[in-house]
Length: 342
Image (cartoon, rainbow, N blue to C red; front, side, top):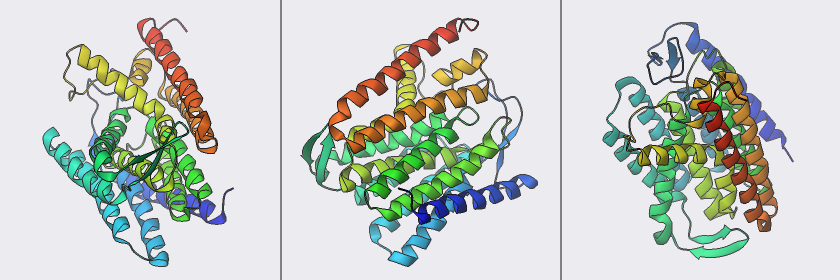
């Protein structure tokens, strides 16, 4: 059940972020950089990018407010430094186009700090079973997964409204989960994030007036990955619930990466091979794709929440979610090959 603090966090995050976006877009500002259309992109006009700085600022405000009320702890401070550091890294990349090796090295360093203070030697829950996994066993896999989440959101940030819609659903779902588990602070932070992302979605809907930029997409990936680590190792939420919640992004990005790998294409080269990109190239509009993928995201959130509520259903929910994603991939590929056929 939603608490008053959760609703206030959402509304405050939405109103403050909407105001900040309005101010940023009112006149040119060095805080944003113009995203110029390229042969690899899907937009046709110059659009400022860097909206992620507003989202980072909004959630940081709530994090500091909570810390002032409940007290600072080193784990929270270091995690905050790592997450804000990712946002700064994205901001620098937006403005100065950092080398791939530099970005990856910084991501592993910053996310290594986050994993170090958030990972807990506890009982992990998989498909209704409990497994004892000490920190030294899962540190490296957790770090790789977290860095993958950081880049996954960046890969999927290529159509108006898509990342915003998915992030809104994910943040609301996480707020509900953590609230139900009695972790009030994380519930409030996720609802404030949902409000801020909702404001961004308003300005990012076609025709988009602002893009997230790396300062936003990298930070969202880092945030959700961090929530996964905390949820699984500290709160006891099932691992597969997070896998399903972010199932659409994980599936599309991983499938595209494997396809390019088998085709011998450079993995770091910009492209338009994602399923959502192929739909747009086949004639679908940005709003149509955002709504369709958003609906899939809602289905994933429902399946994931069923897992949290009844862990013994984990395998069946994963099968259902996976089937939906596979059917979507088959259908989207058919549309991409024959645009005139529904």
